[in-house]
Amino acid sequence: MRIRRRVACRTWPPCLRKPFESPVLSVQRLRQGDTAGARRWDEFVLRMPGSNFFHRSPWQGLLEEVFAHRAHYLYAERGGEIVGVLPMAEVRSRLFGHALSSLPFATQAGILAADSASRHELAMAASALARELGVEHLELRHGEPQMSWPSQDLYVDFRMPIPETLDDRMLVIAQKRRNMVRKAIKLGLRAVPDDSVARFFPTFARNARDHGTPALPKRFFEALTRRFGPDCRILSIEDAQGRCLSSILCFFHRGTVMAYYAGETPEAKAAAANDLKYWSVMKWARDAGCHEFDIGRSKQGTGSFEFKRLWGFTPHPLHYEYLLLRRDAIPQNNPTNPKYRLLIAAWQRLPVPVANLLGPPIVRSLG
Image (cartoon, rainbow, N blue to C red):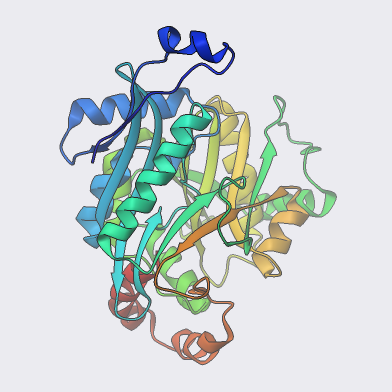
């Protein structure tokens, strides 16, 4: 795919525009295994305000390796420089249909562009690709509205600035949360950085089952830590006997820590392990030079939404925008859909090993 257009400088009179045309703008595809292209892609992402961890190129190989999703990574180029990127993956499912999404398992990874012309060309190229692939819909997950397509704002993202000073008084968090953190410390709980998914995965899988959600496979998290290295880290909360009560996998990107995948044991709530976990992540990230704490997305009206809000995080609506090609309405493949209520209840009663066995093929289709 290669699209070329000349973009004239509109600040000059029409008779003078041609000599001052900007270089050719083209849209191209990042091929799997193109290490030089991936490096250029990531250099653009890392210097662009508004980018996030899901824009980074290692997701391309990871999605193909773990889920066999065919990745389609488009970038706009002008004068030999990348000026926009759009990572997408094709998801085929007997349960939920055939879609092109930017990006499965991401809070947002929509069009990231340096200017409106690049943004427009990437959108047009993605639309053309969606039609070529014969998908039922194209989904672009944005933090701010960018398209005039049908959209939904089911999810919100929660963020807060990380103060320079984080001391034992914990004045930057609400009184109730301070009390819970102190309770955890009095019970002998402590935060421990983990270098593998060995302790993280059992807590994550148990938590997913308890919420009636199929768990991502263990090898997904192993691939994350392998491909992203120090920018993907795990922090666990253990009790005085060294048992892991709660664990969280975090992404680090451009001064922001994103606490994205988490889990806990049934004993964690009574011991206030989760409050200690988020306080410890905040301190951990501050020491790593981060200035913003992103606690991930939640569906509006849920318990996790309220927990994050009461912790002091500010909700930011996410805008998922859809080009409906062979559908009449936006798909609702999420746990709030009433038609999944009985399935969720049944899943919560499964033994964890059985849920872990059955879950990966299902969650692969959800994205």
